[in-house]
Structures are given as structure tokens and as C-alpha cells.
Amino acid sequence: MDDTLLKYDSVEISFDGNPVVHDISFSLRPGEILGLVGESGSGKSTLIKAAMGLLGDNGLVTRGDITFKGENLVDMPERELRLIRGAGIGMIFQDAGASLCPIRTIGSQICESMGAHGKITEADAKARALELLSKLNFKEPEQIWDSYPFEMSGGMNQRAGIAISMLMNPPVLFADEPTSALDVTVQRQVVQEMLRVRELFGTAIIIVTHDIGVVSAMADTVLVLQNGNRMEYGPAKSVLEHPRNEYTKELLSAVPKLRRS
Ligand SMILES: Nc1ncnc2c1ncn2[C@@H]1O[C@H](COP(=O)(O)OP(=O)(O)OP(=O)(O)O)[C@@H](O)[C@H]1O
Image (cartoon, rainbow, N blue to C red):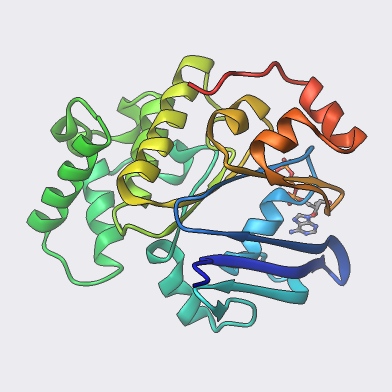
């Protein structure tokens, strides 16, 4: 049986009529972690935004299909996409601190985001959130619940952001540069947390990153983009250890390799 969750089939994406992503195909199975790598401007964010209908007014999928559980996301009405964002495909960004509201506690933001997807009492939301936070190895979930984002470190905000995006238990998580703003030790914690999410919930993850170390620590498959073109796509081990083209070799040599822990 085909268990593909998310599939890009010959996708072209254009801004103001100019294609910037060309003929990209890949697929994602439950629990798979795909590393999306490439230099700045290669189209990584554009590729994932396209699935969420977040390309903005001037951006459009001009060829191909993007399907989630067999449903085509291209041209899906906004009200249907809204149901998929969050509950079907969760998202975390580079700077979770910036996407959290600075003057409201984590708890109240959790209540709001859970309320947006269905009726749930504050007590139920809190119980679910605290359970999730402890599963994700937060030492003091109650304290996180009561904290304002500015009271927590960047790493803690990022970890809380990942937890919040998992409250709806989406089968797919998009992580756009989730470790880029963090220092190395905290990066490791965030990587560990994403691996734990996969282990606990079988979540499939697309991680967009410049950091080959993060890719080698996490990814099962790797897609290398250059100028919106697919340069390489395959199992992480073969792409990282036996890159087939010069671009990938250069990309790999630019960053020291981390071992899988
Ligand atoms: N809203 C937009 N309007 C016009 N062009 C855009 C828009 N967003 C992205 N682009 C263009 O699309 C191309 C891909 O950009 P994108 O942000 O997806 O790259 P990226 O690989 O994610 O880069 P980075 O690593 O810097 O985030 C770039 O040429 C960029 O200038």
C-alpha cells in the first residue's frame, strides 16, 4: 500500500510570473525526516510555503501538484487549507520567540491555538499541554505554562514552539531553519527534541537548514536545491557520503560534519 503522506510532483513555483523553483518532485512517508538543503535563495522556504498556501499575493504554484494524504493542496480554498495548517501540517520557524506574543504567557497562547481548532476547555488544554511537555522532557512544565516568552531563553522558546506545534499531533511538521538562531549546545537540544517528537508520534519532518551537521544528525533523506533545481535527492547516507555533483560536494565541505548521536 502507498503510505505517502506528502508528495510534490513536478512542482514549479513562480513569483510575479517568474519561475524560481523548477520541476521539483519528492515524497514523504510517515516518520520520515527529510533534510532540505541549499544555499540562501535556492528556494527551500518557498518550497515548503507552497504546501501551506503561504506564498503571498505574488507567488503561485505554476506547474505540478502537491498532495497531502492524496488531496491536492494547489488551488485548495483558503478555508480548507486553514484546517490543514496546524492540524495536518505543523510549522516551526527560525525564531519561535518572535512568532510568540511577548506579552502573553505560553499557557494562554496554547489555549488560544487549541481553541482555534475546536472547542476545548482551558483545563483540558492545560492537561494536554503539560503531558506533552513532560513527554518532551521539559523539566518544569508548569513553569513553562506560566512563563512569558521574554522570561525564557531562545532555546527554551524554540523548544516550547515545537511543543506547541505538536499539540494538534500533525502527521507532518515543517521546520524552517529551527536551529539557526541558536548556539551549538542549544541546537543539539532542539535536534534531540525533534527526534523525540518523531519517536513519540511518528511525525514526518521536513527540516530546512543550512547546517549539514543537523542534517546528518537527523535526516533519513536529503534533497539538495540550487537555484530552485533539484541537484540531488536520496537516502541521507548516500547523499552525504557520496555526493554526485560538485555543488553538493562544496556545500558539504563548507561545514564540519557532526556524527549521528
Ligand atoms: N515574496 C517573494 N517575491 C518575490 N520573490 C521571492 C519572494 N520570496 C522568495 N522569492 C525569491 O525566490 C527565491 C527563493 O527564495 P527562498 O526564500 O525560498 O530561498 P531559501 O533557500 O529559503 O533562502 P534562505 O536560506 O535565505 O531562507 C529567491 O530568488 C527569492 O528572491
